[in-house]
Length: 89
Image (cartoon, helix red, strand yellow):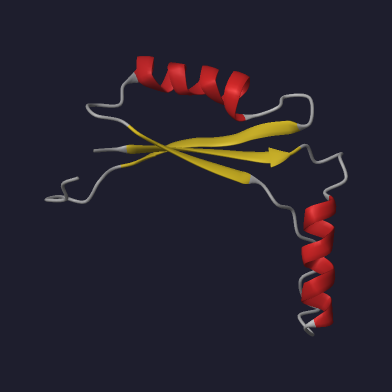
């Protein structure tokens, strides 16, 4: 069964306090090469059947209306992960 992955991130122009906290923690651990961190969300939607343009359009609609807050977040990616051959659920 294929899985559709939807990735959502805070808008670039907005402050990301969680990302700032993680960046600070990395700095305290001596991981100074990482100067910025942004945290987002990942949704995995498993579907029974084929993924076609209609399914992807429905997922895009869900991403824009349910999975993200378009005032403060951007949907940055929607992609399909095919199940490995022989895998069953």
